[in-house]
Length: 73
Image 1: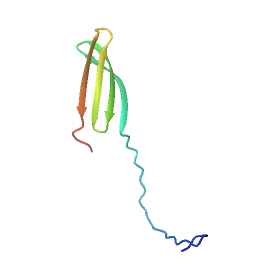
Image 2 (image 1 turned 180 degrees about the horizontal axis):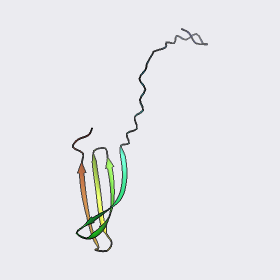
Image 3 (image 1 turned 120 degrees about the vertical axis):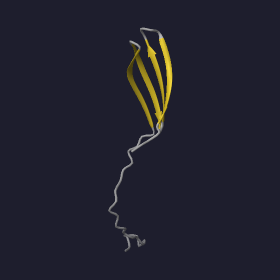
């Protein structure tokens, strides 16, 4: 088959169609209750590793955590 300019073109039948919607970076916010103290949580996730920061305005306490994904399905 040739196009308007005389170039050779070919048509390939392909019944497979996919869109990759995976996002590599995520920013998260939430809340936690630990030992009767409310904490504000902020997190950053880069693929399988998530870093979290905790802060309690009432108790004036702060902390940090890290999580790693060990299984996906």
